[in-house]
Image 1 (spheres, rainbow, N blue to C red):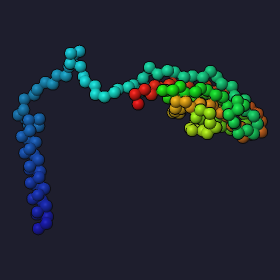
Image 2 (cartoon, helix red, strand yellow; image 1 turned 90 degrees about the horizontal axis):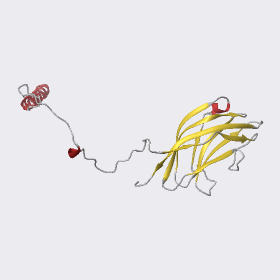
Image 3 (spheres, rainbow, N blue to C red; image 1 turned 90 degrees about the vertical axis):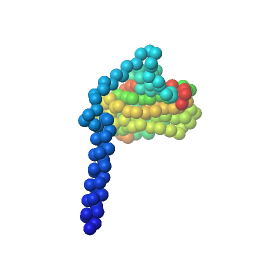
Image 4 (tube, rainbow, N blue to C red; image 1 turned 180 degrees about the vertical axis):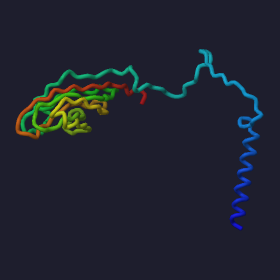
Length: 182
């Protein structure tokens, strides 16, 4: 009995759906074909609603460091003292710095290289991005997505966990974007 009720309801629903589709001109076999024309002239421009900004377009202010030479002391954990770190820039007010690539090589004992963002006048790291460890044994070009906000100081720092001093050669590239209107 339950199977018959279910089958009847299903059949009724299917019949109703088919009859509605057949009576709709878009699905009807008897509807005449109509051309659709989509054109706009300068007098009929496409309206743009809201604020549109191209955040990844070519209008950004590029950022690139020269090849940085960083002396890395033996058995060091780098401090922001100019020994094993290099100051890159202070992010200007109203801008954000987006770092997209870090490349280089370190001739030192095993260690690591990182980008650091710090609030102005602070020793607190607000953000850090560590580069691949292979940078201490071969040339590396590492794609990154690292952001530094207005007023932050940006550093690149190298740490050396071995007992021999070394040196790193590093280049950092990216761009500034304006934050106006956000």
